[in-house]
Length: 279
DNA sequence: ATTAATGTTCAGAA
DNA sequence: TTTCTGAACATTAA
View (cartoon, rainbow, N blue to C red):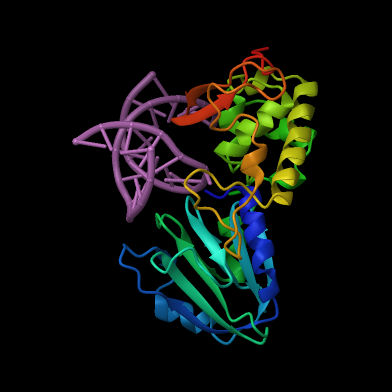
């Protein structure tokens, strides 16, 4: 599930582990199909065990544990992955465990993943750029500016909602926050990028900064299935502040008209026909 | 039994 | 070249 605010919350949650030494990298027994890790377990352990965690970073929707020497462990939670420090939601879907030393009571980082679509990679410093550099991921959504947005998407004929999900254009925005951002910006999700005005690009950039910062402050959105948790297994609270996401038929908090649901690129889009007019 | 879900990626067709 | 569609990945819950 996680989009930028949830992944940023995971990153912050795991930050106390900076300075710890990785004693063991373990794949936990799980009665489901194992998640993808690369390289293979023995090679992973060789590369990682005994090394110190130098920093906890985020790149788009991934958490990066940077090791001394700039090699990295990259967690990509996709739909249901979580990073936890102690109590997991359940034992069943714990996939990977890093046993730690040197940080007192903090003795582990767990990677938990119900659907198991996520993955964990060891990435050597030399290959990091090739896998996560500017050719693969656009500028981070948190530092996105109006001119940069317009520069990267202004010539696209795609609908703005679809374009905002393109990680090569902007990194970090997903289906939920794209809807919330466009509502705050007052832009119709089907509007073609080429037809957006400078003022609208600015509104989208401003709304992006506002919505994401607010969502991070609330520690992300825990939707109806209750899957998403922070590193201490506590729910986020931003779902209580959603304006349009999953609110079909409910009144828009700004103008009172009923929120509508449409489908774009095979994914649900929610918007208010009152304050997100087609032009 | 069917469907949809906060994500990514690939193949193939417009 | 760009964009779109469908399917796949694995699992649960309505």
